[in-house]
Image 1: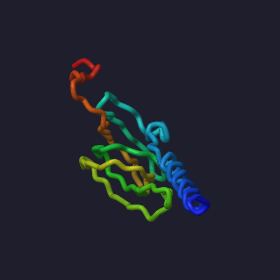
Image 2 (image 1 turned 180 degrees about the vertical axis):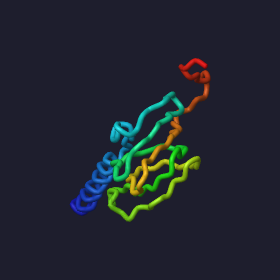
Image 3 (image 1 turned 180 degrees about the horizontal axis):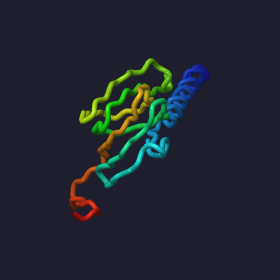
Image 4 (image 1 turned 45 degrees about the vertical axis):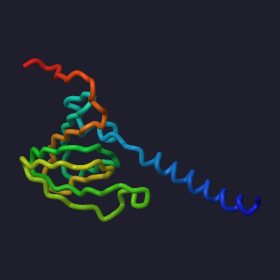
Length: 145
C-alpha cells in the first residue's frame, strides 16, 4: 500500500498543477483587458462585432478570441505572440504587415499583440460564438433601416 501512495501522491500533485494551469489560461475577453481600444459594435448569441483602434507602441495584454474574422481598415504592422503557460507571451512572436481592405479568417487563439509600426491600427473583428442556434428564431439588429 505504501508503494502505491508514493506513486499516487505525485500523480495527484501533477494533475492538480495541470488543472490550475488550465484555469490560468482561461480565455480573457479583449474588451475587458483593453477597453480603451476595443469597442463592441454589436453582440448577439452567435456573433460579436468589435472595432479596434490603437496607436504605434500600444501593447494588448493576453486575450482570447474564438473563431474570428478580421477586416483591416488601415495599413498597420503588428507583432503577435501566442500565449502558453511556458512562454507567457515572451516568445519570439510573428510580425505581420496588415493591408487596408484585407480580410482574414482565424481559428481560436490566446495571444498578446503590439502595434510595432508607424501608423494607427484600425480593424473590425467579428467573433463567432460556439453556441448552438438550433431551434432559435433568427436574430435581428436593433437598429432600424
